[in-house]
Length: 468
Image (cartoon, rainbow, N blue to C red; front, side, top):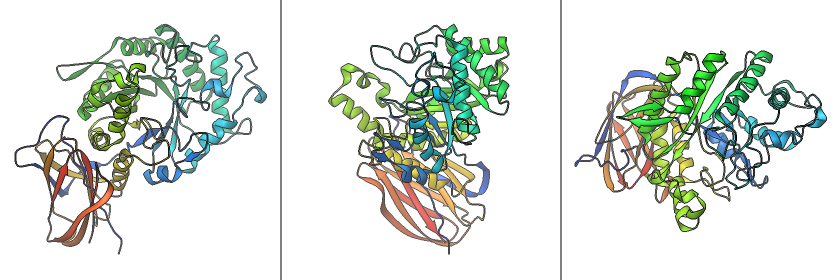
């Protein structure tokens, strides 16, 4: 008999305690409300540290829908970026000899091998250095665009001893409003670059999807609603006035509140529709937990213990609970593609410098297991809990995802009603301060309902598997 999985993860809002009697979640397996969407994409591929690390098996376990190629091998990126492939902008962009694809080929091949789709960012990685080397506007926009066409031809048409990867999404630059770390030119300089590149790509390959601008700052939250920032408005006005292709609009957010992702997604969608881009997909292609909403530890003055603690919290139980919460919250938005930053071994990554998975990896692993029961069913929560539940097509298995972001101890109660079978066994696995999907309990199911009580001793994620 096949084994089917229940997945349980819980989340209370940051800094919000549960009701005095604990937090509760109810699941009604008989009420279908849609499909659980595969929004667990990431940034970066499985190879890193000069090919001294290979996280391919872990990437394969996650069944990643899309890997976005930005900041690969950061902070010393030497692949994917335009300058790393075409070092001499004065060279002839029509000649194969002008390009060096070798390192990028070796970096991208493992991504394809693990079965992930790709969002290819055409541009450069972020530069926190005082001197800016590559994040400057190209001297010749037409030449830069010709190079981009060469890169696309290499990876999609086999040109220059290349491949036929059929990469659909091509993003033009990253965070051009983030000056000078990502762009040293004016706003208009970027708008012009987008215009030249987007038109050329769509003219040659109408079936490909081009987009941007991959904004890090999309605007303010006012009275619980997202208001578009000046850069976003100017960019959309430019695209509308010039009738530019915008197949997807990309944006970023680092926060300590999972609900902010929902608020911003709703506001951004409304603005896109208002400016006439109703058909544009929405790509939330950088997101992560920002402890205390404070970037200070990342700066030069934050080095040392403060930075160490900062990254420990991002990759630890707090970050795991936050990540599970965001993956749940995004289900009720119109986000089409989402990419966690990042799936590599740097401070924001799912792995440490030795290739050991952090607790955040196991939160993503639990979500991946939930996708084995992809038909979404109704959940109701009290006491600040969040939950996501589904059944499989055969109606012989059910899953529930819940995570707890609170700091203190809490009783977490789950009631699953109208099960598709009357007898079964369940086992609970936990991700918290001391465990990575470790077994913490189990029991039997008799009748059409299951009652499970969990005990949280701080933020964490729980995974319960059940078989008939």
